[in-house]
Image (cartoon, rainbow over all chains, first blue to last red):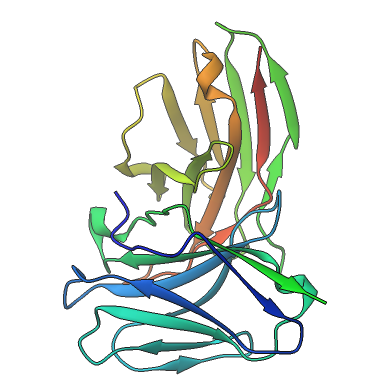
Length: 112
Length: 114
């Protein structure tokens, strides 16, 4: 079972920041937080991951709370092409815990 | 650098038949994972292959089997197809070399079982 909980859906206006929350209250000290997204009928696309510190790349920023029980994925300037299902995943580093366990994700709709 | 490719893109089979799906991993990757995604659900882990050996399996029956070849490409075989096997089948490749890996997904094969 997925170790994360996400809202079912949210929307935001094009050009605005999209803040996608995720709860992972049972995360262990050596588990990472990963984000993937899936645009309709395509394979999931890796976005970003982090362990303790906040992370930023060309796609997004990941903010992890100090207690690591929740995180927020930030798309700084959402476009219509960012409409997708976003999956927050807690993942171990090695062995059986390293598989990706997807929940249902959050559907982000970006409106013009 | 080529990405992950899968074939065929779509497939229709009837109940009881067998099917083979194929995945070519991204250049430089040594690990392939397979996932099943039913309509409206997130992908579910089937199994992973590392250096031609199964390296972890999800909650799927033995009629789901796989292979990985020396060039790291992979096959997923499903015997005795059931209606519930209708799904999008995704493969993901990664480079496992100690520590965490990033899995890159292919576009998937849409299997319909009638």
